[in-house]
Structure formats: C-alpha cells, structure tokens
Image 1 (cartoon, rainbow, N blue to C red):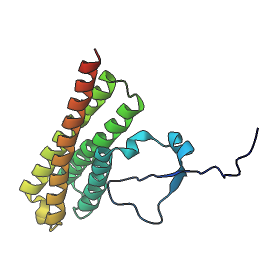
Image 2 (spheres, rainbow, N blue to C red):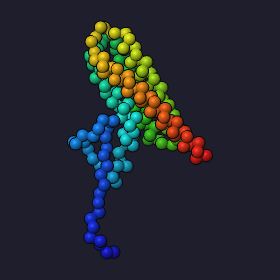
Image 3 (cartoon, one colour):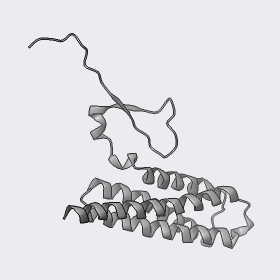
Image 4 (cartoon, rainbow, N blue to C red):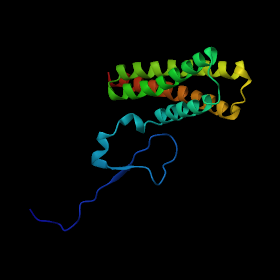
Amino acid sequence: MKSTGKAKRKTRVEIRYSSQPAQEDEKWLLKEEAHLFPAYRNLKVWGKAHDNLLDIINLLKAIPDNSVTGRIKDQIIGAASSVGANIAEGSGIYRGKRFVGHLEIAVDSACETDNWLQVLKDSRIGNVDFDKALLESIIQRNCEVIKMLLGLIQSIEKKRASAL
C-alpha cells in the first residue's frame, strides 16, 4: 500500500461537565476516545441540572442545621440530585420509551425541587440571610430545566411516532 505522505489528522472534541463555557484548562479527548465518555454530560439539560445542584449545595451551606432545616435541606438536595441522576441513567439506556421514562422522573424531581425551593424562599428559615439572588437564579434555572426536559420528551416521542 502506498503512503500518501499525509499525516493522519486527529480531531479533538471538547468535553464539558456543565453548561458553563469551556475553560482553557478543561480536559480534551480524541474523537475516537469520545465513546468512552458518558454521553449525558454532553446534554445541555444535564449541565443545567448539575449546575443547579452545585448552586443549591452552596446556598444551603449558609443555613444552620436543626431538625426542621436539616429535613428541608435533605429534601432539596435529594430532589435536585435526582434530576441529573435520572437524565444520566436514562441516557445510558437510550431506547426511546425507557429513556422517556427516566426523563419523566427527572421532570417530577425538578418539580419537587421547585416546591422545596419555594418553601425555602417563603419560610425565611431561622431568619438566615442567605443569598436571595442566588436562590432566584436557581429557581429560574430549575424552570428552564423543566421546560427543556419536556421539550426533549416531546421530541423523542415525536421521532418514535414518525418511525412507526
């Protein structure tokens, strides 16, 4: 076989862990290695859900623990972590109906998260002066996650229906 003398070009793809813009120091993978990377991390909706969870954890650090606040904090973190976890689990079994089932659970968890965030906002727990702007940002992003998940579900179901 003749060599053309051209070096084989390796294409690099950007891998990001969140919806935030890529930073120069973030990791890069060769395109042929990209299949080793979990696909859910490339979904914008997962990135937003993940960012939300991280912001929620940071917000809750300012709230002291007692029997009431501990329960509310556990519920918020449990619901918010379930959103990203179900997106991740569902994308691992991307087979239409099962994936949609996991996305629907993620919607339920995002709605539960919204409920607990409203409780946190309205209750003024312990008169703690936490970052209200951050809380509003989290609530807004959570609503975006819900809309994105519903759109993704609709898109998948539409493709499945047209394939029949």
